[in-house]
Image (cartoon, rainbow, N blue to C red):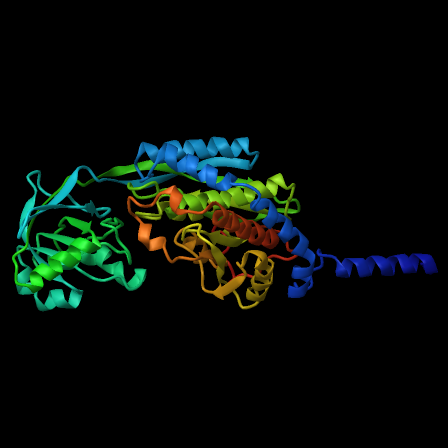
Length: 472
């Protein structure tokens, strides 16, 4: 072999140096490298995301045109049709729906009226999955309790009555158990129906619905929510020794499962298209309000994040896939079916990002993943300082990405100012004008920056633990 000339040796040395300093290097990703290399691009994305009200206007079009989107309704399926056709007009790739069988609960007509100590029609909402009353309704005396423990202590008084759980809101996780399990515990005590104080910290005579559960070991009794104000009124009446009687009528019933769809669209990666960053929200909602906050806003923000990357001509190394899941509210069938449909590529999911807390002012992300991945996410978060969305905390995810996270895929949730979220959650007050166009734009920007950079990094994000390989 002939000796290399000095010029050739210099050329080889130069190429080796460039390769070692290139983003394509397999060396561990340095946080300062992320900040310096993506700073200008992140600012460009943020500025572009805030230039108009396109995201908010699209949200308003969806919600005003199709309204609430409970599984089993034409509203949901027509909204899905519109989204799919609009995504294709946007030029997104691989736009399609993936079939999912979903529950079909029907509210029907419903009412509750207080008969004693005075007559008053009460605002109410049946809870999702509840059985109905007999056609003539149920009339009964009300027993008000403040906890499951108090119900146990007063079980002898509950038999044959309608139990009202008047439990003040502390946290959603602590208080929602009365919505979920209230009918079970009331039936166990012999009650013929159960009511809850709506799960909300603030009320203007607005009832809030949501999913509930039954236990096959106890009778299924009707279960409904009344307002904070009326629950407190009945508490005061009972404390005075007054007798409270109400008449409850509910036509609620459950029909056989019906088909719906997850919505999928992509921005295909330029180098590693088989590796995927997923972001999205859930397109179904309860059958009240417009489902704007929970979770059409999250869906539109994820969709808009991918759309603006395409508009900017940005094509990351890996594929960014937006998924709008169906049936989060009463079953998460969409999330489970997505994981099963994509079983053979789960090991190639790099990160899953969910936004399901409203598109209020973003402050950062919560991250669940490996210790080695956290500094990388935190470095990307620094690029969101211009919109004060740079706080990265440990622990994050969401219901729809939970099946992926169980397989070891890192998960994230967009964190926002949630002060008012549960004011409107699952109620007729969940409407578009509660949201602010620029705050929504900032959510779009945060999602776009995070998804793009993770998808574009030279090496894939370290997994939470070794992802499950596809079964054969």
